[in-house]
Amino acid sequence: MLSYTLRRLLYGVLILLGVNLATFFLFFTVNTPDDMARLNIGGKRVTQQLIEKWKTERGYDKPLYWNEKEQGSGKLTDTIFWERSVSLFTLNFGRADSEAGGDLGHEVATRMWVSIQLALPIFLLQVISSTSFALLLVMFRHTKLDLWGVVLCVLMLSISSLFYIIVGQYLFSRVLKLVPISGYAGGLDLVRFLILPVMLSALARLGTEARLYRAMFLEEIGKDYVRTARAKGLRETVVLFRHVLRNALIPIITSMGGYLPYVFMGSLVFESFFGIPGLGAYVIEAIGKQDFAIVRTMVFVGSLLYIATYILIDIAYSWADPRVRLA
Image (cartoon, rainbow, N blue to C red; front, side, top):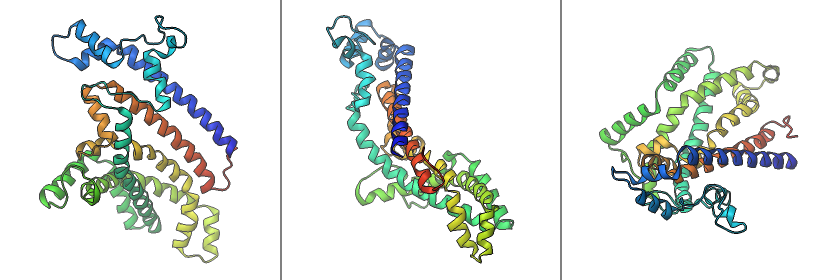
């Protein structure tokens, strides 16, 4: 397993390098530093003097890849590519491009924990609720409960998450006044601000996940090992939870593993609508302010998290099913 993990880590580094190079090329070739300066300065009277001043203040006045004016290694290191792309691999994210922009490393570290406080309960609640609901439908398969449960799943997955947010805020915040409509606070008050987005986010994905898991459980329940377990006299609940659920863990891990990066990256929609200062809302703000430094950083962080997640998923396969060999 160690050699397999090291090999996947090497592949991950190569993929991350490719993503980083492609991102840099798109940002600095399609949008030159002069274009970025014009977008950030704004206004009708954008002079070349203002553009040069903006570029100098943010280090965009240097050559892209090769600096002929420097000596030795400075020809490579004193460039935009080295300072804005290579430095990301040392987690040196630099500063934001906007006027009020601060240190990106501090912002990412601070906002990441806010996103985790929101996304981790959503992840756990989603796994438990989707799996339990799917097993309930399978337990009562070929009955009216199963039929109407599937209809409910199709109805739920057909509704946009924005609908759940708008209805939830109106009902629970404006009408019933049980929770704040938006905002964020630390300490024990955190629960009051996060309980509504957590419940709504889990509800928005319940139909999609439960319908997928139900199909996987129904496929497993017709196999020989299930008939053998029933022939031994095991109860249906034992068959479902001990045998069917365990053998269906591979696709469940695959499905849920794809959601893990959002635990750190945050939810763009929910954080924006509920005023939660996580990484998701940070990206939306950066796009609105056309702050390309923040967007580039979040693309790099997102790529890093996705690569790490899928390596962990492959390792989890061998834990879920001993027949899987990481060779």
